[in-house]
Image (cartoon, rainbow, N blue to C red; front, side, top):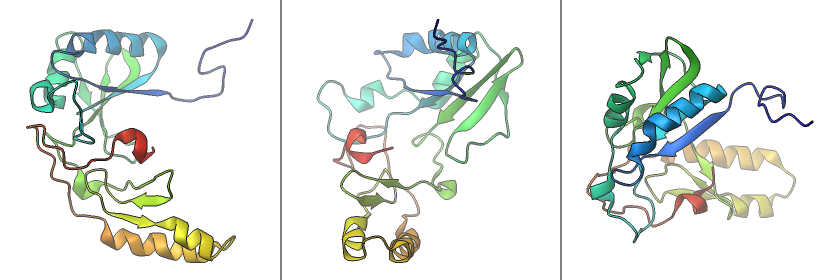
Length: 187
């Protein structure tokens, strides 16, 4: 019989991500936490980012803050702040009776730009310096101009870090500041 347990497959930790929308899936928060606990997984709750224009819901009406998610979880499980870090924007909490970590990524309610160390490369070869801005650098040009040479690419990436914006300006009223969807962004 083939095992499907994460430990048997060699994974030390697995983290689930969940975007909670008021009136859409907020009734599933405790079920998600219980699933993560039962399976020995970590879970991060992410506030919806205004990326791409959506027509199936109003972002202002469906916004559900990390604080509200945390309050819902604490109706069943006490959350203890943790100094653990995954070197990303998630703030982690532990529960005294579980190895699962609960994380919160809060671009609206707890802006983390001052400590953000993330960039992404799109499938088109653009280095995105912030999810909340359209700033990017074309890495394809360098790759094509200097095929097989790593130094020019390294120099371009290091130089691009100076262009990384100080912060994004997300609002909870549903205004779209970035037309690109997450599936176009890469991760």
